[in-house]
Length: 540
Image 1 (cartoon, rainbow, N blue to C red):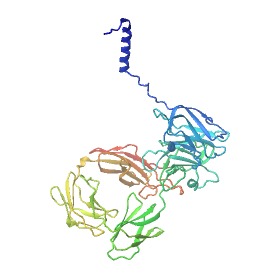
Image 2 (cartoon, rainbow, N blue to C red):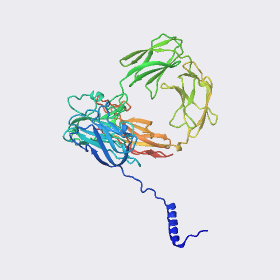
Image 3 (cartoon, rainbow, N blue to C red):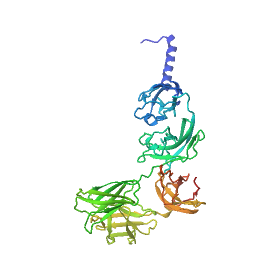
Image 4 (tube, one colour):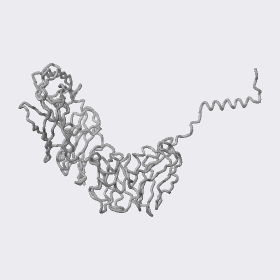
C-alpha cells in the first residue's frame, strides 16, 4: 500500500477543506437584479429635430425584451394603421430596438413613440416604465404637458388601459370628427387612473377618453366607452385637468332588428338601444283562445314572446315603440314543445329580505292552490298568497315569515299550468328561516341640506345592487336583515328624478349622472348595526 509522503500532506488537508466549503455554500450568482434596463443612446439621437430618417435604433445597457408591445405601444400623433411601423426584435432578447417607419410623417410635428411598460430586462423582467422616444420633423421639440385622471362613471372598479385623445380645435373640427378622424395627440392611462400628455403644442383642444375596443382611435358607440371634458382645453394655461373624466357607455338609439322562432311556442324579438315602451302586436288571425305572454330578458337586448301552439307556417307581428313601427314575419318551423320545468330559487334558507319564488321555463297562466300544501314544522298550514310574476317566468308565494322556523311546501301535479296547457310534476321544498340575531343592518344617516334627488344603493363587493331607496331630503334610511358580509354604499345623483342612473351622450353634450361610493366598506356582523353618515353635496 502506497503512503502519501509527509511534504504533500498539508496540501491535501487544504484541498479537503476547500472541497467541504464548496459543498456547504456554493455561489448563488450574486444578489438578484432588481434594476430596470437603462436607455443608453439612439440613432438618430433622442429629441432630434429636422428628423428625416425612416429607421431608428435605440440601445440599452443590457439585453431587453418587449412584452405586450401591441397593447402598450402608443404613437402620437397616430400613424396610418395601414402602414404600421416595424419594430424589431420581438420574441427574442436584444440590447437594441429598431423602428422602421413606413408611414409619411407630417411636417413640423413632434412625434412620440411611447413604449409604455413593454421594455423589460431579459432575466428578471424589470420594467423600464413609460419609456419614450421623441423626435421632431420641425426645428424644435414641442414641450407642453397635460395631465389628469379618469374613472368609471358607474362602477367602483379601477380603470385601466384607457386611451386619452386630444383634438385640435381648428376649422376642420366638428362633432363628427371623433367618429371618422384620428386625434392630434394620444396617450394611455395603462394600469392606473392617471394620464399625462407630453410634447404638446400651444393651442385649443377638445379632450376625451376612450375605451377603444378596435384600437383605431375612432369612437364606435356600439362597442366603445367614452368620456369627455366639458370645456375647451387651452394650452399652455390648462396643464392640469381638475375634473376627473368619467367613462361611460352611451345608450344606443332604439332600433328593431328582427323576430325569429327560438323553439316551438317561443319567439324572440331582437332590438338595439333602449326598448322601454316596445310592444309586439299580433296581426295574424288566430283562434279566440290563443294566448301570448312577453317578457324582456335581463342582460340581453331581447323581448321573449310565448304563444299558444298553432299550426301555421308563419305569424305576422307589428313591433311598435314611440314613432317606430316595424312589421315582422316569423316563420314557424319547430315541432317540439319544452316540457314544463319548475326550479326553486331557495335552497336551505329563505332570507328575511327574500320572497319564496319558483322559476319556470315556460310562463305560468294558472295556479291551483288546492294542489299546494304549505306547512310549518308543526304541520300547521301556512297562510299564503300566490303571485304570477308580470316580469319573468316565475311564481311567488307571499307569507308572514317567522324567525328560526322550518317550512315545507309540496306542489302536487297539475298545480301549475303553463301557456301551452302543460302541467307540472310533483315538487317538494324544505327550507328554514334564520334567527333575527343572525342578521345585521346598515342604518344610513343622510345629510341632504339642498334636497337633491339621490338614490342610495347598498351593493355587494362586485357592485351588484342588493337594496336601494330614493330620497330628496335629510333622513335616516335603514337596510335591515343583512347577511354578515361586506357591502358598499353607492350614491346616484338622480338629476332628472326618474329613479334610475342615466348614462351620458356625446352629441347632446350630456355627462352621465354623477355617482360616488361611500369610502368605507360596510362590514356587517350578526346582531350589529352600522351607522354611516352620508353627506349629499351640490355637484358642479
